[in-house]
Image (cartoon, rainbow, N blue to C red; front, side, top):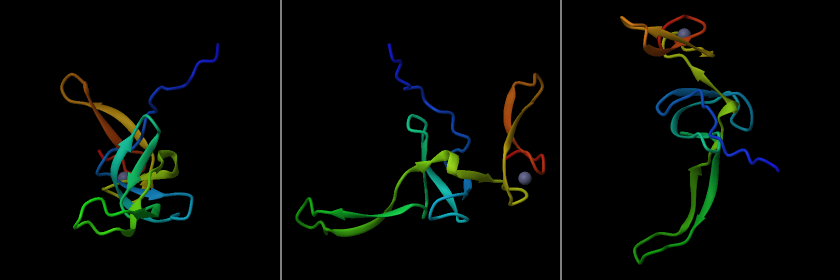
Amino acid sequence: MIKKNTKAKKIHVKTGDTVLVVCGKDKGRRGEVLAVSPKEGKIMVRGINLVSKHVKPRRENDEGGIIRTEAALYSCKVQLVCSHCDRPTRIAHAFFGENHDEKQRVCKKCNNIV
Ligand SMILES: [Zn+2]
């Protein structure tokens, strides 16, 4: 029996994070994460991976035409940009608080909480 892999993928960025695109046509550009889809392993980033969509007017006052909109891209193609040192970085997890039960994301480069 072939087991279908439908498990949600762990995504290393969250909505609102700033990310750097590391490959594809938007390589080297930064943007804010608008949405995360763990099921597909994809994210949406503002101003990144723009596609033209041809939209038909649905209602009377609607304008049809071609609009530019963001398309989802795989989360493995972006790196998180640290808000402290402003560098693309990897993330470590550390525990804080009295009982060491508060999990926080930590920048690998400057060791600040992201
Ligand atoms: Zn940092």
